Image (spheres, rainbow, N blue to C red):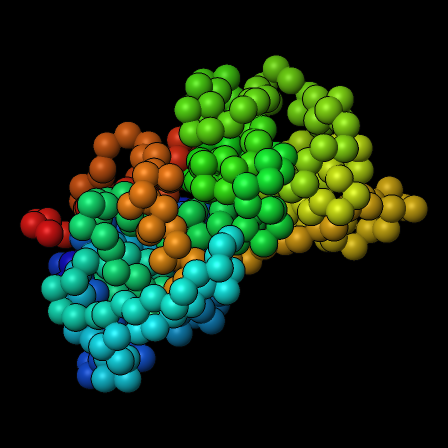
Length: 362
């Protein structure tokens, strides 16, 4: 099978990737709790390059292999269902914003699916992945495979950063720091369109119209506005802050004492890999207010695959409540490595998508 692979990423995963036309397929026989999915599209995320660039030991610890294919998010077609997976999977959404009845979902060969796999030797920048049910959901016929490939990490992160902390339909005010990125574009839509919140977002001047089109009521241009000061001027009105940037502005969390409700929550989902970033997170999480720390509840989100969350996102996309924002054209498989360098700029609008399959006829 075709796959982009690396053995040692160094400082640039993009430079380390090589295209192997005869890469080994995922192990057979298929593990009982997994499905075999032929990937048609994938969407790269910052974690895809951040972990490999930590060094070979980090890669080995996560993938258990010296050679690996990056990529977590995927959409594609089921080729085989593990013997331990019942043909119908009944799930209920404990984290859904509304009480829902259990739903029955079936898995069979030829079925279109989407989701997320953890970092393994066989990532989604290769022809096949082996997800578990927690990271694999059937895809509605009206939703494109390319759009669905962006839901696994970006949308699921936004979902888990917002849904537990707001009251659907109550008009809670939410601030999204970094509204034009992969997580941010989904966060605006989930909060405003799906949950009925009033959203303020930050972005650069060129992305103001984009954020407003997605549902933001107010947008702060961080290139010309002191974001923390502008939020302080609003007073304690926000129930939730989702920081999809991490560390900028530096005083965003401590300033939240003045713009976040006493019962509000500050959720950080974005962070660079480095000592400065780790120090910032530690300070936000542990420094007491008497020593200059913030008073509001601080949560550092580490996204976890949940079948019910992905299913809800798929349903919202089918209903038109959320949509994929794709930066530019869908990239052919042969050009995939350059997207990791683009991600590093921190200037992508929405998500990036690669067509992995040579031919897509589903």
